[in-house]
Length: 506
Image (cartoon, rainbow, N blue to C red; front, side, top):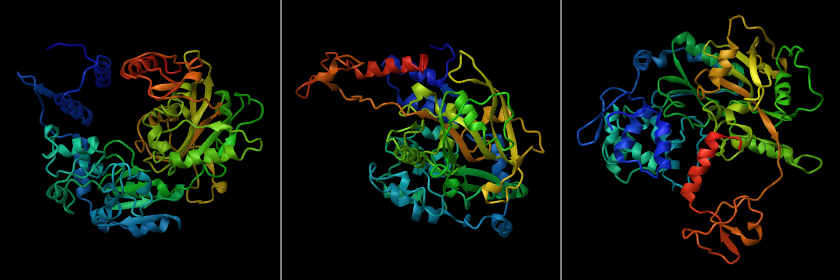
């Protein structure tokens, strides 16, 4: 119809799925353009969709790119920055980083789809590698003539086809060697990788880098492992902060059991907010917290929680952590994009963003701040106590590497920590600053329950199954003593999604 109710893209896709509809190539073209920021499209008489011409980049992005091009990066006083860094920090510099990227990162993408892993990329010395090969290029497209979304309508072998190829085949390289050579040439203008990468080790390194960028008009991009919005965690013509080598917290004293009696919420907090995490966790009915560094990923955090659990004197597991399904995903970028946690208990405990207790971050101003909720109230409409006030402090001696000697105090600038708390927990990783650490609540470890996620359940357990048993021609019994329990997997999935969206805690 020419007129229809305005709904979101997500609502429309969900409606199509629940009505057993498939997405046509026309629709995929439109969805991709909408996701990339195109504002309009034209529908021809024959029903085909043509994207309105125009650049994806906003005017402000164009201005930033123009100013970045005018900077002679090699002439900047990098020795001044290096003199301010800790002995463990490293700075990668190259006027043409492409050969380094190809030698360190490209071989992994030549592996079979199930043989490759981001675990093999995140520790490469340069810090240039990305999780998806095509997102090493602008707009995740290796065609240097790519300037507008209309090329996305092309086939895999046509300009723009890399988008479809990258997502459909897991960033496999095409079989056309001529096309590979064209994409991977050193002077391809579509490359989107930085020439200057800093690996900070302590907070002072991040502060020095942000201040250096501010003094010289440089953009800053931030990456842990590279799981991020398209091209967001790697960007040419920026001072790139690769946080992978930053100090770890979770593996030693980062996990803390919040024991003792409840603290009177009317009492003032400690000046450095060190008591804030457990006070908030206890108010939420949680008995533990974990502090993770800005360079840690969930693999490191999960292993730390497991090691803590196994070290318990009584042999029982104590804590459970809500987090991402892939080990190389970082708590920072994942959490601040929402954090679905469908495999790790979101339906019981809330999304990843709900787990955050306190944040340490270096702001664009160069200030290293620590902040979190310091006032809350019970509200029956909220799963956790409702935050009513957020407080923060500023790091007074960021040059000090020994954290035991850090001094926190009142900020000279007027920072609205209430707004910052709201903004950073949804802006995406690196949007509002470089996170140096984050405190996340831990949950009591629940008893193990066995779940059968196939088409059959053992007959002796069928009577105990919460799902019950069904007969269906789609799933006849295939093993002796087994009975099918799923009537229709597509319908069951749709019902589950609807139930989850209506009541995530069910």
